[in-house]
Length: 455
Length: 164
Ligand code: SF4
Image 1 (cartoon, each protein chain N blue to C red):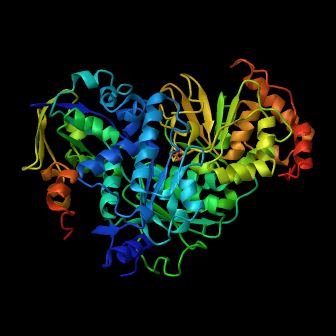
Image 2 (image 1 turned 90 degrees about the vertical axis):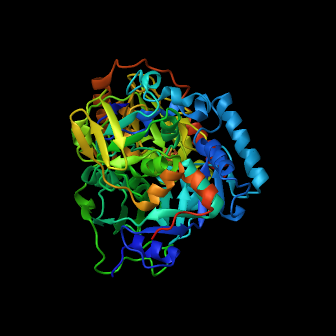
Image 3 (image 1 turned 135 degrees about the vertical axis):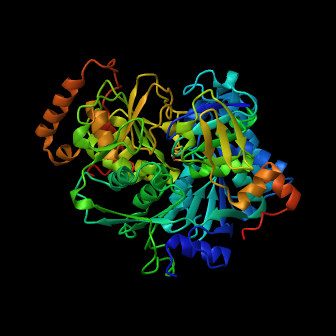
């Protein structure tokens, strides 16, 4: 029978002919564990009567979800985690500030295409960016995988998503995946694998955005077909069966906005124009890479964000952080008034680094906008692309970023003025320390750091 | 007799235990006292051993955070009956020994506060307004539940149940 990519991978690893609906016991190529579940994972291993993980070379551990530790309770838990890592002899350990687990798992090459990886995090689907079957699981499942090197899986049905055309300037793959979520819904891919076609040649970061956000549709896994990392066999057979097919024409796509409190409540940006925001968060495993920061800097370089808005930028890994430092992107964002956080999850899940107060409205580039996700249950979270985030930080309202990217300086300033005056008076205006952007850029250029001034 | 707690569609794990009350944030002995603190204030003090949760579509969506399920297990929830479940939540419940049963009609048949009986043998949730039929679980899951969860099962057998 012709097979989907999920059926191929699971047949291969389980060494049997598996089709959707079958239960398989699958050996895993790696297990990913992060700080926020470590206590439960260690307890699970203990309850299982297992002293040691099955293979110390196949376990990757991260401190990223509440890092650096915001409270003594968290700090104690991190200490326990470090002691456990040392006692087990696990070498693949990334401490606070190294970045978000998923970003590092993919960019440092820990995800072997065509294998099964169990992660302690719901966005472990991200590993499909390079053709791995990444499945997020709870602490007990992770403890079992750590003990046995195996997990049980029901072979999922697949949904085929095809992208055609090229996006216009100011439209990103974040908008593309939000369009898919809008189409499929938060549970439309429940127990299923989302197979992406027409995305294999995109940059790795875009593929992480796509695969990771399949979680928002309830998917078990999300796999991009035809990536440079994938082996030849990692293609669906002609005639493979799909439960649903979705096609998105990127050439006509608008920037998309998810309206709180649902991530599938997605509208074209034109329907959200003028929505005030108090806080903008640029970061997360979905959109915290160099390219995302550069897109924001394309809007913000040489300008100052609205005095009534707070902008938090959190690079998704140290590599992304340093690349953005080296090319002047972080300097441009800081000079525009951004707070730059250490690499990690940051405020994405409301535990550290600028949580939201009641009634506050946030525009986030992350992937979730549930009530209470980023702090107070009375805050609201809109989700959008880095371009939308940058414009929201600048003006204090949600707006279509495309006119800003096209405008000359005068027209640009007019656009900003108009939007700012619409919003004025919602929050207190913060004084931001002196505008040193030129001075700093020159210093950076002198010291030999490539301060690229244009996008 | 158990009490039924009825919820709607898309009940996410942040509503079961908000992230800010994770064990990680408030300690292992306290997090379950925040169960449904935003979504259903009073739940944690009024819930009784054996009570049944009833819901609509996509019950337990959101993060993979198992402590949401652990909180329900600590309160001794006797079972969850919903139209459908989010996949990680479903696995977590089986692993921690909470029966999770799909039923198309339970959420309309059962009212919040009803006295109900979960009859797994007969595949029925018995409520004042009638019986809701439950979809049978795969034998694999039944074996794990019968052992009280995956940890207990593995301790006893050393490996997963056969997958047929
Ligand atoms: S960045 Fe956000 S979505 Fe990604 S792993 Fe961290 S908390 Fe989860």
